[in-house]
Amino acid sequence: MRLARASLFALLWLSASITSLASASEGRQPGRFPLSIIDNRAFVDVQVDAKGPFAFILDTGSSSSTISTALAEKLKLVPVGAGTGTGAGEQPLSFSNVHLNDLAVGSFSLGDLDIPAMDTTRLSRVIGFQHFDGVLGAELFRKYVVTLDAARKQVAIQDQDQFKPAADAIPVPFTLDENETPLVEASIDGTTALFQIDTGDRFSLTLFNGFWRSHQLDMKMGTTVEAMTGYGGGGPIRGIVGRPARFSIGNLAVPPPVTRLSLQAAGAFTRSDRAGSIGMGILKRFTVSFDYGHRVMWLSKSAGFDVPDRYDRSGMWLGLSPQGLRVIDVIANGPAAKAGVHDGDVVTKVGALPADANTLFAIRTLLEEPGISSVAVLVSRASGVQLTHVVLQDLISPQAALTGRSGTAAHI
Image 1 (tube, rainbow, N blue to C red):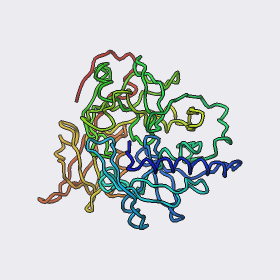
Image 2: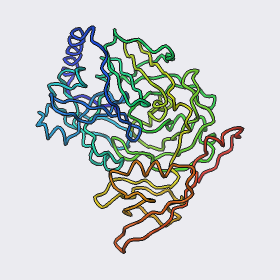
Image 3: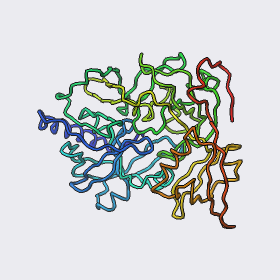
Image 4: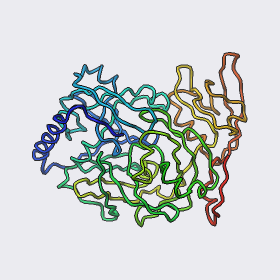
């Protein structure tokens, strides 16, 4: 997410603050903290003005840390101006900036900051977050080395002069763009280009409009489907979803990832100076360390590195609703549509699982399982309750189907 500040003075003052704080923390031992991966987002507990803990996403794609308007109001944070920005959605963002006396993970402090307060209500409802209080962005990564170990559900934070990469870690050099987002070279089906590294991106791989169209990569994705693929700052994210035969970061080959070809007409995914975004769906396969000081990302393969990347097989997107789970999007001619499920329906049960905030992510996982042929879905409408059976199917090419694949494509 790219954010524009209201005051240049505030930026200069913040830079000076960070420099002075860095010198006071030399020699400190690394801090290790619990990490939760929810919807392919990396959450960590944060203290705001010595209060908390609060659930923040670790986001290399955000030029600034942010706080939810709900938490800002709860903590009675003082507004100090306003700003604008862009997110993955098509609509522009506007926000108030608020002043924090301190933002910290354990003893690792960012000092006092002026950061945007963002309304996350709609995003949380669509994605299914029960607790989403803010984002830790560029301020954290430029000051500390941050290591995400999704397999062990742990994040390590340490001062830059104390960091030593693991013996098996592979160095991937990067540059930083104007928003301090890392950019690396990667290759998709033989085409090498510049990709951003975005831990706030739920998808494995996103290709931006201009890049995939100019290289006709939609013709190299096997079976594809058009769908709502997420929700970001600025609204819903639509794309064509498929799977390339090959993808690598530098010389490091990655199992063929579920890939989103952006259909956005505006917003961050329309940038023409890069090919796309490498998100947490790929990064969680590694223990990944971000060393901004040396412009190096270190990757160590996790135990689950070779696990196939799966995608929804039901053709419907479920979000939170007071009555259960609301159907927010249905793929045309997909399994849910054929079973008579419509946008706006309220789902109260999927298989043996009651459909609510506590089971939403378990239901999404269930609907990705390749060994399940159909699932019972209980739908509540104004006309009454209806039981239907959704016959699941692979909406994109499974990883096993990629061997020897030709350049032809099919669209569901």
